Amino acid sequence: MIRKICIITGSRADYGLLKLTMQEISNDPELTLQIIVTGTHLSSLYGETYTEILADGFKIDKKIEIINADNTSQGVAESVGLGINRFHAAYKILKPDLVLVLGDRYEMFAAATAAHIGLIPLAHIHGGEITEGVIDDAFRHAITKMSQLHFVSTKEYAARVIQLGEQPSTVHVTGGLGVDALSNLKLLSKSELQTKLGFKLGKKNLLITFHPSTLEFSTAEDQVSELLKALSKLTQTTLIFTMANADSGGLVINQLIKDFTERNINAKLFPSLGQLAYFSCIPFMDGVVGNSSSGILEVPSFSKGTINIGDRQRGRIQAKSVINCLPNNQEIYHAIETLYSVEFKKNLNNLFNPYEPAGASKKIIKIIKETGLSKSLKKVFYDIEFSNIMEKKNG
Image (cartoon, rainbow, N blue to C red; front, side, top):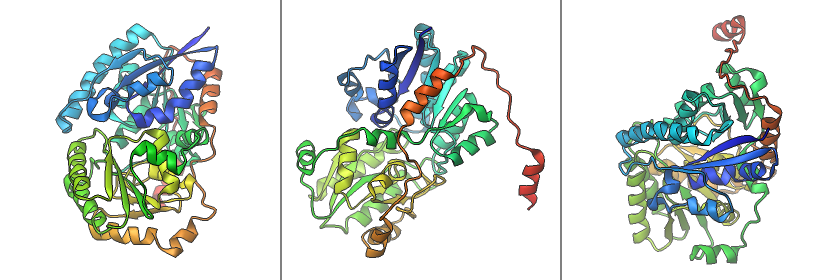
């Protein structure tokens, strides 16, 4: 019997990671690919990036609009409620055998909740990770508890999913999807990249992406203002910005960056570079700056440094190329000085990325095909030996 696998994509970022998996499903005669598009894909503010999915030859089965123009906490809460309702209705029509979600966004939480309520088996990619500075951290662990299959990027994350009570037989270490995507991309040359961007790179270049840290006490406005203060000192460095995501505070960040780039001829803001242009930029950058997961998960594969600001990514396993700093302009500027130092650059030789090797997409599809999907979502909680827990607690 042919299985229907429904993939949810909410942004250009997660589509770039899921694209290979979608291709694997589409090419497999034993599987049928269903695609539900939601989130910023459908927003004109973020470029209506669902058109890229169509351009790649995929068929979109459902478009579910849930993004609220008000991206405050109230707006996000309303989006989650609306999403649960609309995803549930879509599943009743599509009747998938398995819903596959990636990561920790509130859009994925809504999709996962609707699947769980609808008694549809759920598979989760990139569970077990920690991002202490954002509400997504709790969404990720909640999705884990609603899922029957777990595809994690490292052994450490597998252990954490099991610690949450998931049966070890359902937890599979596949590596990071970003690394997988990189291995299948033909990156643009410098001249091709500059033509695509309509922007000439300088002798020194930095790529900057800064998202709201939704669990930190300082506001998005405060944090990005500190970042821009530090960057304003780099008058001889080309600064390429990408827009913040749709989290609460994202619109404020984007406006401040837009104002900054209008005042500084060495800086330019792009709504979204897309996977190919983004990854093609990195070889020509001196490093990346901000708090995006890509700086932790994929950038180390380029042997480039990452300046990771604040607590948004705190808790993730990191390569030695990551420089952590507080969200104030002095700390950020000091981190930039470290990035350019001879000693730091030496550390980039023979750099190990803990999210390698590639091959995650093929592993995921193989496991899905080999796994029986029960209509019952009953799970037995996996208890770690109580004595071992107490020993660790008291020792």
